[in-house]
Each structure stands twice: as C-alpha cells, then as structure tokens.
Image (cartoon, rainbow, N blue to C red; front, side, top):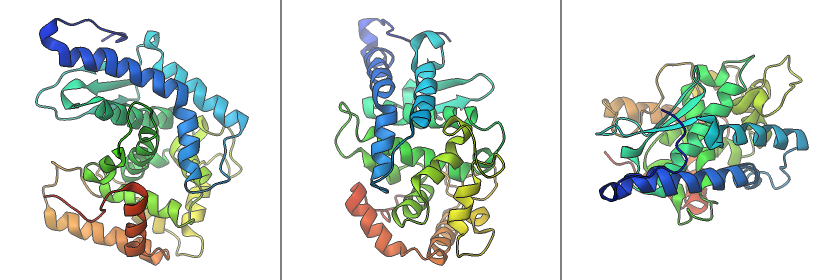
Length: 289
C-alpha cells in the first residue's frame, strides 16, 4: 500500500473517492496546519495558563509533518467489509492504516485519523517507558479524548462532534481522563508527558520516566498504586468498545469500580458527569446495549 494522496476512482465509487481523495486530503491539511494549535487550545479548557514551549511545539510539529506528508507513505487505506476496525497504528512499520468501510462521513475519518496520530506519536516517544503500551485503557482513553478535543475545533468538522466521546469507543476511560483533568488533580502537561513520552518533551526530571509526574499527581494524597487500578496493566481495555461487549454484568462492575476509584480520589462523579454534559453536550450515563 503506497501513498494515498488524491486517488481517482470510477464514478460508481464516488464514496471511495470522497474518502481517499477529498476527505483524506482535507484531513491531512487541517491537521498538519492546526494539530498543535488545537491541542494547545483543548488543554486550555482545563488550565487557562497552559502553553507549549517552543521546543515542545517544534517537536510535535516535526513528527506531525512527517506522518501527514503524502510522500512518506505513513498513512494507507484499505476497505475491509464488514468493518472489524476503523483504524490501526502498526509500530513496527510506523504506519497508520485506515479502513474506509468504517467511515460514514468526513468526521468519522477525522476522528479516527487523529486518534491514530496520538498512537503514532506515543510509540515514537516511548524509548524509555512502556507506560501507555502496558496500559491500553490509558492510551486508548486518553488518545480518544484528546482526538475529540481536536476534532471539534476543525473548521470543516464542526457540529457537536464530542458525541463520539461516549456514544461509542472507550467510554469510561474517556470519562476518567476528563475527570482527572477537569478536577485539577492532573495537569495537562503531566497527561501529555505520560501519553506522548519524549516525543513531547525530550528530557524528564524523574530519571527519564515521562509518566512519573502523572503518577505522582494522581496519587498525591491518595494511596500508592491507585493508578494501577484506575489504568491497569492489561491486554484488554477496562470497558470494551461497543459491539465487543460479551459480558454486560462484567462491564457494569468494571464501570462501577472506576467510578469508585475516582470518588476515592475526591472526585464527585455525579457532579463531574453533569459538568461533562455541559462541556461536551453528551449524557455520560446514556449507555446503549
């Protein structure tokens, strides 16, 4: 699979043309131009004084440019029907694969591409830590949440797109990340360090461990090890995505356990859900089975 760029298809495949041509082209341009600015603006929702240093901005922009350059071949497109996945990042190949069969509109593509960009940057920034890799509930939840913060700002993709945050995907993980940020227990820089590693900041005060400050902030005044319960080392997500929930009772128990952990950290879960409804225009407890 090579460079996608703008691909011409026969007229009867207009939808595929939209995906590989106009939708993907527009998404590349929008994200290459504004990814860093949108991420900074999104973090200011939780800390008005947040800003990237010139080094952080330059480092993020460099890797974004590399990924989104059509000539790099870092993004490939397939059509897998019925869709079993929407997007995937392959660390060994340094390549993002998008499944056109999973996209109903340009916003779907934008959300998935942005989410996979976070995975790409994360793996590129983990030479000295496997924090996110060993905690998929953290990397998936944080990546999906931050992707939505960016997508909702994109000029061509407006219209309440935060609904994807909890309408599907890593619902409770998204809420946990939101609650940690909104409550002020975790600062944006610490979250980004833990997720993006040295791709975000080249040096870390704590022995080269980019997740150290995130763990310290979460566990400040709380019992040690609560991070391991909130974002456990596991090959499975704490709350599997919609369509893959084989055990409803297990899901409910898992969700309740996460809410209990957030409450233990001093977070008013019900109040936070109300704030999230106002901030994100979505009902956190409207679970569809």
